Image: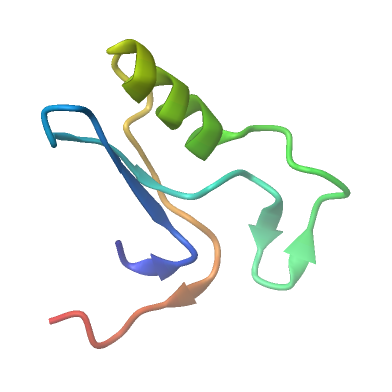
Length: 70
């Protein structure tokens, strides 16, 4: 994770299956849609529960860069 907010979803075998944004509510920092049109976190959780893969497995979020990760 490099942007806040971002999430990570793991399957039952503790493998990372999704890394990225929660949804597409924000188009750019400070510019939001009236409502999100995609729900990546919800889709990833459902996929993890059913043992399916997530596509795409990574979607960069829109937010603040986390500069001190390393």
